[in-house]
Image (cartoon, rainbow, N blue to C red; front, side, top):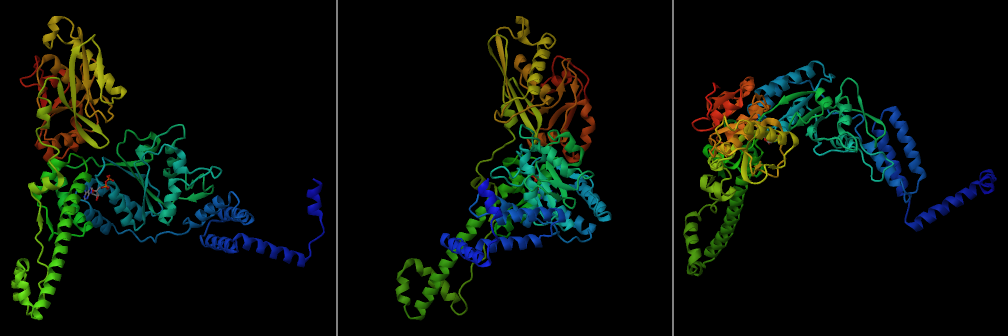
Length: 632
Ligand code: ADP
C-alpha cells in the first residue's frame, strides 16, 4: 500500500523528464518491432467508427470501448477481441440503406412472371403484399413464409420480392440451428465469441433495409442450449420489437426496416408462436406438365447460359425433357431436373471445347501448310498422307482468308445420349407392379418434407411366439398404427375369411415383421394406417394387392377412416410414379379441389369411409365384403 500511495503522491514530473521517457518508450517499441503503426491503426478505426453514423447511445458505448483499447498493448490478451468488436461496430450499416423507389406493381408482376412459370396464386399474394407496402412503406405487416418441398422456387420468389422492392437480398440458413447463440450471438466474455447469424447477415449485406430470407425456419429446434425460435420471435414480432439485441453486439440494432421473408419445408414442425406471426403461402410441388414447361422456358436457357453455350451447341427437345422427368427424377420440385440438365450442358460444353481446340489445331496446321506452299515446298507436303487432304482444302480457300471454324453441329440429346450422360434410367413405370407382386406388400402415400412420396409397406410371417416386429426408423405414432392394424385384422380374421383363421389364432406360433423401406429415412404419422391393414390382410389371405392402387388414411380401432393431411402432394406423388388409382378418406373430399384438374381427370379417386371399403377396392375382385363406396 505504501508503495502505491508513494507513486501517486510523488512530485510532479518535469516536462524534460516526460520527453525523455517518451523517447525511451519509442526506442523500446522500435527495438521490439512495434512502432506507431498500431497507433495509426487505432486512429483509422476511430475514423471509420465516426463515419459509421451510430446512434448516440451506441456511439457512447463504442467510445468507451475505444478508450479501453487505447490503454491496451497489442500483445495484451483482450486487445484482439476488443478490436474485432469495434470493427464490427464500425462495419454495421447503422445509416446505410438501399435507396427506396416507389414500388412499380406492373413491373413487379412482369418480373415475377418472367422469372417463374405458373404459381399464379402465390404471385397474386406477393403482389398484394407489395401493394400494401407501396401504400404504407413503413408497414411491418405479417412476415411471408413460403412453405413447400425443396426446389419449388421458394428462395427464388423471395429474391424476386427483393428485386421488386429494389432492395438487397440476403439469405440466412437456419437449418439445423439448435443453439440460441447461433442466432443471438455469444457474450463477449466467451473465448471465440461471435455475433449471431442475423447481425452477421446484416454486416455482410451492408445495408439496414435488405430483404432477409430466413431459410428453413422449421428446422430450428430447442434443446438445452436455448430456443432459437424465441430469438427469432423477437425479430418477427412487428408490433413489439423495433430492435434486435445480439449478445455479442450488446447494443440494440434497429431491424425495423428489414423485410423478413421465411421458408419452411413443413408447417407441422414449426413452433406455434412463430407460425402465429407469419402468413403461410403454400407451394405444394409441380405436376410433370408444369415441370416440362419450367424446364423449357426457364431451366434450359439458364443452364445453357451458366455453361457458356447456346442452342447452337445443344438441342434438348421436349420429348427428351419428358423422359428426364419420368425416368430420372421423382421429386416435387425441379432441383434434380435442373441438375440433370446441367449434366447435359456440361457434356455439350466438353464437346464444344474439344472441337474448338481441334479447330485451332487444324487452323495452325493450315497456316503452316499455306506458308510452305507459298515458299514452294508443295512437294514435301504431298508426301505426308495425312496432310494431303488439307492441301486440297487450302487450294479452295487460298485466295481469301483461311477457313473459319465450321459451324458447330448441335449435340442433339435423344434417349441414347441421355443414357450415356445420365446413366441408365433410375425409375420406370414397373416398380410398383414388381414390388407388390408378392402378397404382404401394399402401396401407401406419405407426406415428407420433400413433398408427397410413394411408400411400400412390406410384411412377412415367420415361426415365432406371436410378436410384432417393426423396422424402418419408425416414430411412435406409426408404431401404434401398426399395433392398431394388427389388432383390427386379428379381431376380424373370421369375417375376412383369412385362411389361417381356421387353424385357430391368426398369430399362433408365428411372428409378424413389418418393414417400411427405405430403412434409412425416419418415418412417422398416422396416415399409413390403412396401408398397414391392407398389407396384413394381403399377407394372411395370400393375395396380392392391386399394383395400380395407392392409399392413405388413418384408421381407428373400430375401422373408421379419418382424414389426413397433404392430399395434393400425395396425389401428385402417385401421379409421378405412374399410379392412377388412389384410395383416400371420404372426409378428405374437400381437399381434392386443390389438386390440378388435368391430374384428377387422369386418375381414379376412391373415397372410403371404413376399412372394409378400402380392402374391397385394394384387391382384384374385392374382399368378402361388398360395401357401398363413393367414386368420383
Ligand atoms: P427452394 O428454395 O424452394 O428450395 P429454389 O428457389 O432454390 O427452391 O428453386 C430451385 C430452382 O428452380 C431455381 O433455379 C428456381 O429458379 C427454379 N424454379 C423453381 N420453380 C420455378 C418456376 N415456377 N419457374 C421457374 N423456375 C423455377
